[in-house]
Length: 480
Image (tube, rainbow, N blue to C red; front, side):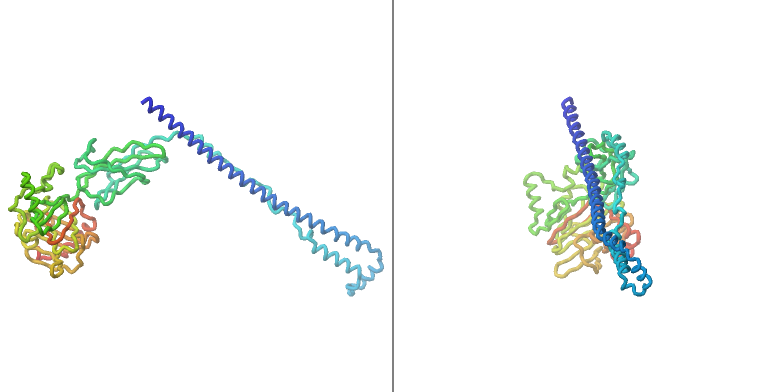
């Protein structure tokens, strides 16, 4: 601590001297600039006045010859001749005296001195170059060490979680004009209440925020909550963090249950690829050979911690695995309440693909949409292209282009299952039914692959469409 005190005091002393030197440099530059302005103004006025004086001198010199001519003319003593000229005014052009007088008049009128103005072209007033540094002097006298900024206060009432975005709003307990920017930190957690000191997830940092609010966009809510804290910074030092807060980030999070998948489907987390060689069988045999015997379902992964009560139990065994032509895999989380939303992107060259929901009782030989236990949208690129809504072995052709990414919205209490273009949020089809038991996300693919995105909230545009009744009006009673 002693060493730190000495080192830090030396540093701040050097910083202070550097700041004052910088201030003195600014004042010197300002002084030089203002002095230059005075010198330039003086030189300009001097130049104008000297030019005006030179013009006056030249005009006076040119008048000497005129004065001499006038004196000679005025010295004419022939009064009789002058009188005769006056009497014969009509013959003025033949009178020598009058001609001389006219020459004097014309000479005076045309002389430079006659047209010369003796008013100075510039003023001698320099008051516009005066300065008053009284206010600046008071500001300099009020210079103090920068105070450490106070800790901001996060406004929970104004903060918002929606559309997989979080808008955080905060305020300063008192006005501080020295604040330069804010630093926001956030992290994911599964624990409600005040943030814990130790968390598995690290704090993520957002720097350089100039306003007292910030929106984090494009988040994936794969945990139930997020912790937030903010600190204010001036040019020299950062203040303490605000009291951390916890915001709930409700979203539907699930994984694919590999223990339910067809043996020709290779399942990795949220990705599935159809394998004509039966890759799953090879994987199972390899695990059995190693003496493990248990399918590597994400539900059994120790990284997931305590499973959710809604997650389906693992280890369905080989007899429950989808087989024959039912190239199907289910999600591992039951939907029995509320509204849930997820998206799936499939490869355009997949020969067949389907997405929807199904009861857990869906038979191992049953295909999606061909029984009363499942509902789906189905894309077929085999032999002929078709895009249909299927349920209970009935199909409705959809007259719309097939998007490469589908959004699925399940409103369990209302019995609504809607499908959207995930990019434009265009409604494609809605099933209206009454779910008699919890459902699971369900997928099928043949000669292709797909990837699921979870941890998503129901988009606001989807909620608006449902409120306006678009979903109900587009439902097909024959498929419910």
